[in-house]
Image (cartoon, rainbow, N blue to C red):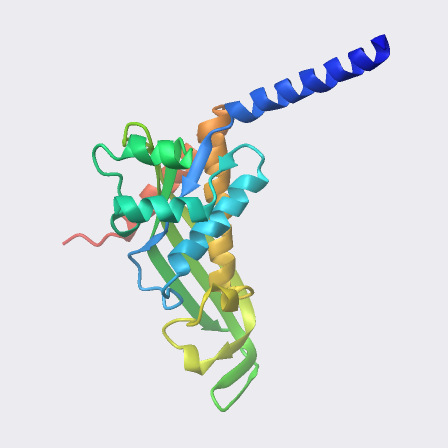
Length: 236
């Protein structure tokens, strides 16, 4: 009997400890991404696809609790937040109460660039090229973490994703990949998207959970990005 009671006590203690750990994790809701770039792969529904992908990445770290998309969409529709991408005055606390989210993560794709360079060789027939090309893609995403209680932006960062690829290119898709994100799985664009989402996840875990020396690396990346942007400016 004593042994049974001891075992039960250990189970209860373990459950309490687990609950305490879970309660310490920030609760995030990722809202629909917006697009301010000329990305040809952006289509209706892609904003929520990116939000779902980022939610999966965040949940995989085991450092956050993530609100389900279905719960967010219904509440954000009522608050007209999905269209504006902002938390209006007085609505932040209500959104937090209804969804359980402590923070809302908003992402905006602000830049997308794609370059295709010839590497020599390869064959071309009927608008389809095989080999002889090197594709590069660059993506910039502005991330804002909004406190669902106060409506204030607690964290902000511009994150970049880069990818290279080669091989098959189809002339039909000049100016953009087209289609939805599923068709971008193995393209430079898709790889750049995934790289940016992983970088966003790592940054949020560093800034919101670890809160240690890892921020020095992100500050250095941000300084390098800003210096690069200044260098690209052409002043009269």
